[in-house]
Length: 84
Image 1 (cartoon, rainbow, N blue to C red):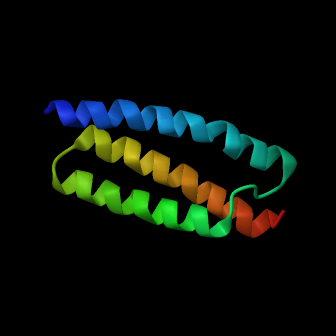
Image 2: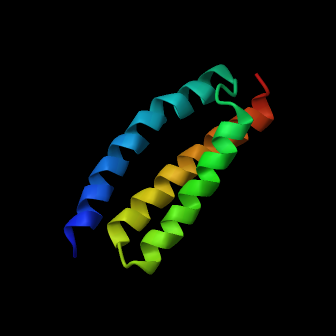
């Protein structure tokens, strides 16, 4: 295990934590608050980074990167289904 894996993991935990209230608010209010372009580019980028982390054997970063990407994907889906 290398220190970079732990550092990325901890930082990404905060990023994921920051997204949770946005996802919950979208479900409660049935609105897609995040712009479609922003959410699509971000979730695709996060999944790509997750693959890169995996190839570098940064397994903690891979896990949390996938979770963060999935939260962005949920925001993307909310935007499509709820429109606003």
